[in-house]
Image (cartoon, rainbow, N blue to C red; front, side, top):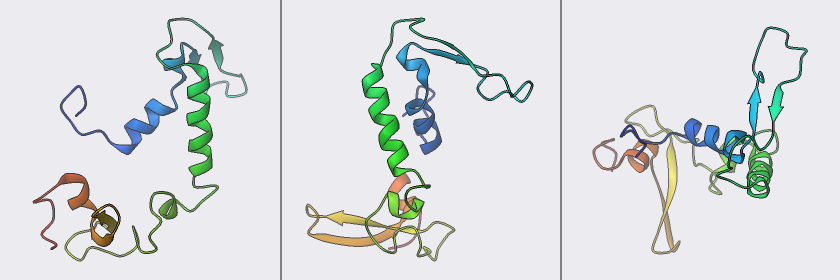
Length: 124
């Protein structure tokens, strides 16, 4: 759970993983529309880093490797052919593959049921 008691979302996690603030670097003006020809202001080592720059660089490389420009987004998160493509039938979510017994068995289940738990979808 997040500090506000809500579930963490993919967008929030991605924002944390790509934020240079955690390395002690201030970046200002990166997304401005006014004078967009000016480079952003960067101040290195402004405060004590929470994440070292080497770890941050490794995470950026992994994110770039898994990014949709390198690989189709539906294939990035699952090695199963129909994961994310087949509709659930009870709602607007897609079926995703789930493994059981240390990968011995695999089956498709509703994505909302997998993320939110029992009661999120009536699918068996």
